[in-house]
Structure formats: C-alpha cells, structure tokens
Amino acid sequence: MFCGSGLARKFQWHLHLRNVPGRDLILIHPANDAKRELLGCIAPITKHTGIGKGSLSRKAMEKLKALVYEALDRNEEVKLIVQSNPLTPLRTTRHKNK
Image 1: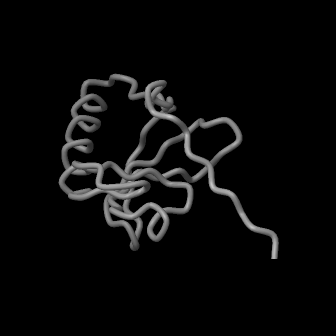
Image 2: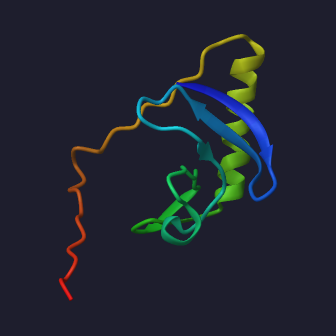
Image 3: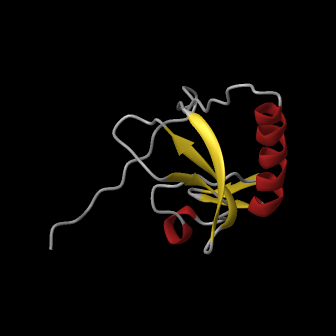
C-alpha cells in the first residue's frame, strides 16, 4: 500500500492509502468517533476511550503525518499492515429482525 497525501475540503490534510485490493479512496484523517465520523476511512487516535472511540485524533494525525512524510522524503516505501490483536476478542453486532 502506498501512502500519498492530499487536501480534501472536509478533512484538510490527510493520507491516502493506495493499491488496496478491492478498495479505493481509503483516507487516514482525524476522527474521535468512528461510527459518526468514518465511512471506510482510518483515524489515528492518541488514547482509546471505548469501542470505536478515541481522543486527541488531530494530535495523533500530526505525529503520523510527520513520520510518513519523513519516510517519503527519503524515498522510502510506506506500508500499513492491519491485523487484529489475538488477545482481544472480536465483537460482533447482532441485528434484530423487525
């Protein structure tokens, strides 16, 4: 996955994940509440505060951007590997039929 950067009006500066099989337009941008603020995007957070929630996302985004831009300035490839934590059980949501 190649990280690029861009400027979207809604998110200001963000990172753009590219070359993700079966997906497009995955952005990394600040958000503290995944359910309300994300639609397939990823948000860095400083502190996890609950399921799908965190705090100080803008601060975490600034740190992440600095690391990514430094690597890109050195012509290094930037990759993001997403995996679940084997010690954390996956939670599922059950929908009631109406």
